[in-house]
Length: 232
Length: 320
Image (cartoon, rainbow over all chains, first blue to last red; front, side, top):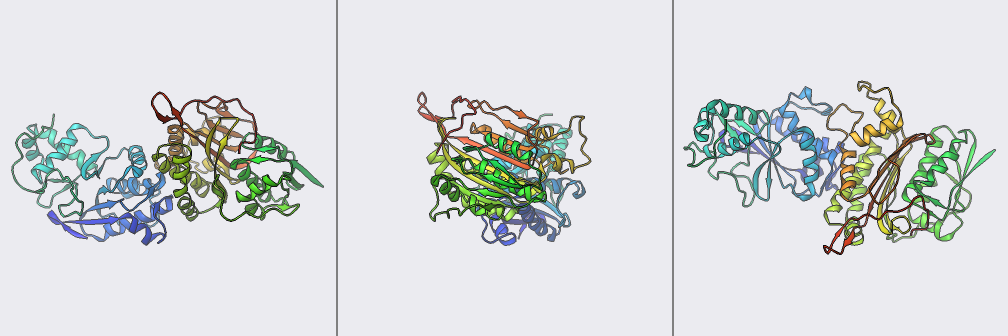
């Protein structure tokens, strides 16, 4: 666990290690629903132990196979759990822990995981932050407004609607709407000093050659020239 | 009194219906003898189905059935290598000694008949199959290497159907062989059979879900297989069969699921099966067969691509 800028906490969770530590030391595949539920519970416990918001990097790189049931338990249920009140997540498991305040970045997702991750993400209408080929991306059905707002948060650092609207050269209501939607989908998180941060890899994340939209993130500087606008 | 249930020369998903029709006429309290003496070949579905048959018989309170093994040495030897006799010996009383499976394995048997009852079984099955499936699907069937991952996912989800829904154990088998007469190509076949509660009773356990006036085994199969409906309220459930459906469609394969008195099939262009059969002989549990054919090299593009090869059916034959 590492401190995160703005007082947040950053976890890096290697799913392969969690699988072997919580289910069976001999397993290397994330298959079956009970396995996925056990791994998710272990992740939730780590999040619950941290006070305040946490950004958890879920690392698939040591996982050989991920099936649909396991992807649903880990990817979809984790996202749903922190997006909605826990009581609304059916069958989330008897070992439910205090929710905490979790945000997620998924990395190490290879071709052999994509089918399962995409299937469950689409099924639940979720968008995720994922590191794909070293690039931090928003994956899922998002409006252009939301994508641009998320990218601009990287550029301008913590921002409220007013600041984002200046950066985007759009009206404040449009910026506020985009921020609200990003926050509701757990793609933006509240900054300790006010405003919003994009959910992304922390600057000290051990991802070789990661292309984080702004390497100096977070900063309090002025928006970069020519930043894309958020259409109203 | 003993009632004899003769097996046809070829025991596959089609001829197994004859077996079940014959079985329906034998009350559970009558001693049953399954006569395989004249059987020459059985598909993974046929072999796992025979295990489920005995399982159902025992669950219904019947006596352990007798089993007359195939007379042909090569057939009996092959059935031994598939693991059939090993699994059958606790369910049937053999009328004569059966051959032991040779060590070293059988190249066509990607996964010998393996019992499935818990999640740990699925882990072991997937680990076992992973390495060899690449050789068989990519090397043997000419499919792209990414087909291998989907194959393991499909196998995992098919097995989990037993763990999650059957309320009892079942069996899985995976074999690759040349489907000479029906298709003229190599295929890899997954068969997963159990004699548990079946799709209709599983869905009925969710009493909150409204059902239409028509509610029977066929409707239950349509709901589960085509619409991804599950007995659980969790909206994330039902993705396993949906994933299997996508995989089968992507690789021009076939999915057939039998439960109760109905059978539903996703039929590719190379086959002429019926999409939904109803009014079949009642048999408990669920029996699933997934068939993935070899790619056909496309001369025009110089690449391997699935292509239609229409076949007449039923046309049983010795395909190995």
